[in-house]
Image (cartoon, rainbow, N blue to C red; front, side, top):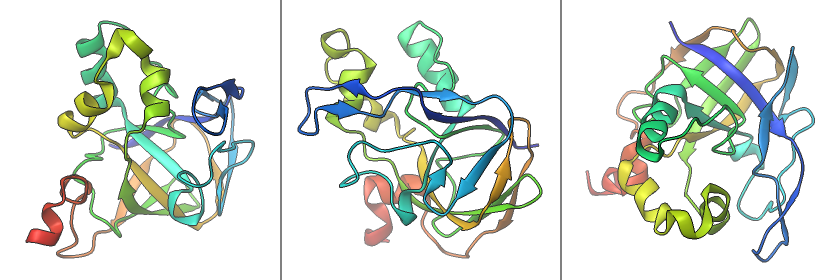
Amino acid sequence: MAELVAACVVHELRPDAGSVGVTAIDKRPVSGPVRVRKLGLHADVQASRKYHGGELQALYVYAQEDAEYWENELGRPLDAGWFGENLRVSGLDVSGARVGERWMIGPTVIVEVTSPREPCATFARWVGGPDERGWVKRFAAARRTGLYLRVVKAGEIVAGDTIEVIDVPAGAPTITEVFVGTAAAG
């Protein structure tokens, strides 16, 4: 059964060498319920709204199974929020999710899969700077990018909520297909 492992919001804005000067990638799990709104989780922010946030990227999701893959690769624990995700989930094939697929999280929230994450330089700096040279290429090559969701129906969620796939559009490309560009070629 698929479930919400953690809901994460920004812990603090951190200085960053990028053009904005700060990053909101430092996400940490909340304890207790959190409100899901049209533009994301209550108390969360995005430092660079040019590339993050908005209705089509209201929530960033990362799978526990993919996090465990990276824990083995990097040799360290990667707690919920480490990837900058708002939702850490388990029991879902996030990379195989189809664009337009809808999920119900808990008893009220409905979300829709929109796009894969595009790893960026801010993410590379967050991961480890010079200790992880080539991180963006390495992360992309593994095809475990996570995905963005739009909020169809707002409500409240809490860690431990079940996640049910309630609609899968026939023939829609998967997140991995969109990421690698094969959907357009097919």
